[in-house]
Image (cartoon, rainbow, N blue to C red; front, side):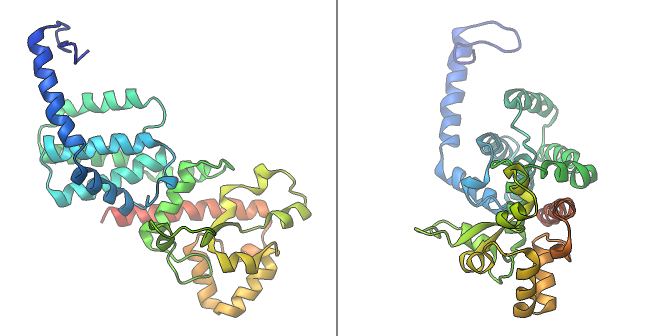
Length: 297
C-alpha cells in the first residue's frame, strides 16, 4: 500500500505520496543493508548470550530486534552506549519469551502504534525498558519460565535462553574449568563435537528404573553440556556412581560449585528423577534471572 502511494491516515492514493514513500524506502534500504549496522547488531546478540544461530528458536526475534536497534540509532538518536545496553536486554527478553513468535505482525504494529507517543531518545529507551520489565517479572522467573522448561521439545526458547544465560555469565561446563561460551565461538566445530549435550540422568539408567518414554527421559531439565572426554567417562553410569567419582576427582568444594553453576541441585544423585527435574527447573530459571540482572547493570 505504501509503495502504491497510499496515505495511511487519509486512505488517499496519490503520485506525490508514492514518490515520497519510494524515496524513504530507498534511503532506509541503504541503512538496513549497511554491514556496519548489521555486524554491530549481531555483536549485541552475541553479548546477550546467543552466540550461534542454533541457539535462536525464531528468526523473527532477530529481524524485529534489528528494527528496534535501527529505530533507536537513526530515528531517536539514542547514544551508542545506552542503545547497546537496552538492545542487549531487549534481545535477551524477546528471544527467551518468544515475544515475536505468536502473531508477530500484530505485535510489531502494536509497537509502532505505542511509539507514536515516544518523541525523544529517553522516551524510546523508557518504552523498551518498560516492555522488558513487564515481561521479566518475578512471576516469570518463579512460575512461567520453570513451566516453559517442563518440556522435551528439541526447539525450546526456554532451553536456548538458559544456554544463553550460561554464556552471559561465562559459566564453566559441568565438571570443567572451561566456559561453555568458548565452544560456541565460530570455528570451534570439527568432525567431532568438542562438547556434547548430555543426560544428567542417563537414558539407559532411566530405562532401567522404569522410564520408557523419551518424552520423560529427554526433558530439557535433564540436559547439560559437557566436554567430549567427560561424556565418555560418564557414559550411562547412574548419577550416584559418577557423582562419587567426580567428588573425589575435583574435591567436595569444587564439585558443589560446578553443580551450582550449572543449576544442578545439591544431592541430585540421591533424588528421585521427578524430584530432580522439579528442583532443577527452578535453579535453571534462577540462572536466567542472574544473567538478566547482569545484562541490566
